[in-house]
Length: 352
Image (cartoon, rainbow, N blue to C red; front, side, top):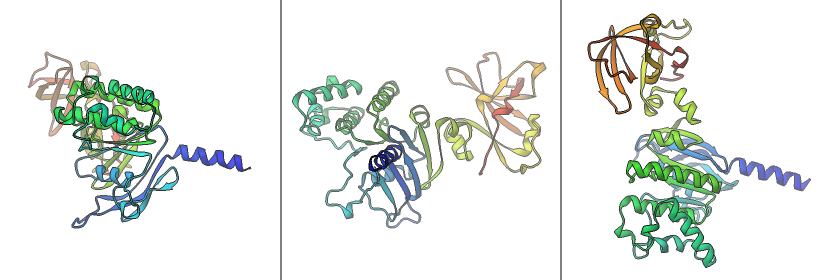
């Protein structure tokens, strides 16, 4: 019987590696909390992203999870054990949870190799060498192994800081804007390799970013924060296709926000049960230029912008303006073009 309940307990711990329950944090002098009644759970091996505009409470929440900030109310549980803030613990910070700082937190007089080595100095020399080389490869740092931090760029230091955090194989890794100092080419390489590496380690990751593309491409779950609150949580596909608010819709890509009463102008019949002032989302990619015989409507092109892989068109139908993407090079301003809207993709907001 004891063994049976132990197995059940272990499964629950694995299911919820980390639990944040109704956490509130308000700094002195603030009118509203930096983190306002936030709750979510993170499974073992899950890549969980916190995203939102600057000042929404993302970085503060990471520091709370690590145990570096006291909270006003709520609790953080790691493997079922309460994470204590600095006022209740002699040495601040929860063991097993590692935070890769935005300020890098590197030893200035030690080499890249020595910075990573320090946190695993109790391992055998062979295991140290294996682990360090593995991380240097993942983060493209082999050529900098004997350099000191002051000789490195911000992006290189950032990669060293993440490698150092990963060296001790944390159960939970907290990443605060880990790609912010990387150029686009290196960002795409590193983020893919890092995600693959983390999934192999089965670490739970909480990833803070304001880059919506990174959130969509890397995450198992996304929580969108605004003004200290989580306004929507779900899978990347749910967040993108069924945004809870216009803010979420436009944060995760280009969207036309249209009132229900204007759907008739788009030759779309709306249900009478929906208030005419309610809003719907029509993604740019869900409007296409079609043949005259299959067109739902005709609109005048008033703007055309080149985006490399496609053109972005602004069109006008009476007083209603819409945006869409097109590969048609022959279209020019002033043209009247036939359009068709994928009505199955139109999303009605649950909150405005």
